[in-house]
Length: 134
Length: 134
DNA sequence: TATTGTTATACTCTATAACTATA
DNA sequence: TATAGTTATAGAGTATAACAATA
Image 1 (cartoon, rainbow over the protein chains, first blue to last red):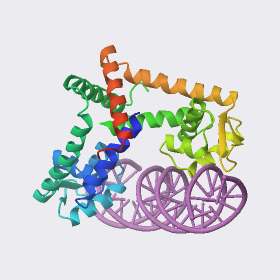
Image 2: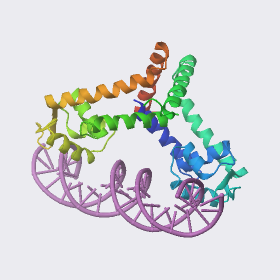
Image 3: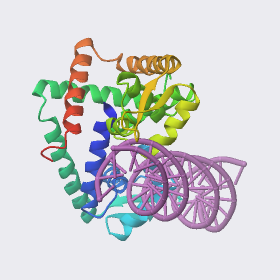
Image 4: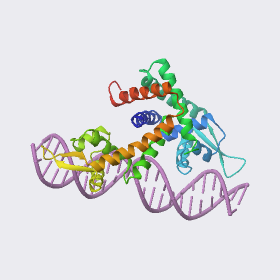
């Protein structure tokens, strides 16, 4: 059951990001950089379980669109990433559209069911992220 | 959060199916045919939100492995699909492995949280499958 | 020597279109 | 003509390997 739900959310994310000229991955990168400015490319890629190769082209796009900035870091091999004000606005707008759809989707659940559901998701997500014991 | 969890389950499914010489999609097809024998290829593909083109090669594989049978239907354009006893055994074995992992994953949740979670999933899955209102 | 970012290459998965045989 | 199954082709997405600059 999880896969159709996940696919639906992915589709909505892709559409919301697309309305602002981004792919789903580019939006995800934008969101991570907004939340944790100052990281380098490899760190952002790792946070998303993404690829350090593919993030290059996405950052090219984000930079050309004036949403993210790359600057050389203290270790001059790495790029320090930050979002521009425009980038933050776009990120917020896309996030709002996604959250609106999530609210619609969760509307059929009671308040308590919804809370339990989200808590359970958090537990499972955490468990999946730590590959210990497996 | 949903996407990492979904990805984890997908990875486990792929591995479990792989140990029996199948892909995840081939296992999914096998499971649908086992549950609803007598359907044709297009119907099975639709039930999985899969492709009527790609199911051809998968059924070739399943048939060569002696797990599924294609027979001409009343309408002789279509193939009636059934599982062989061997197919049912393989399907059951893969399903057991997947369920074992699901149980492990859900182990951290209390019994009531788990029940609420699964119920919520069912509600959301149903909602996602009917494209009404969107 | 190892690491960051980058680029090039190949491979897998998926979607689209065309063909056949039946209806 | 329309549909089920099949096949061929092209495209997107992804992974792997090699490179330059820096440590």
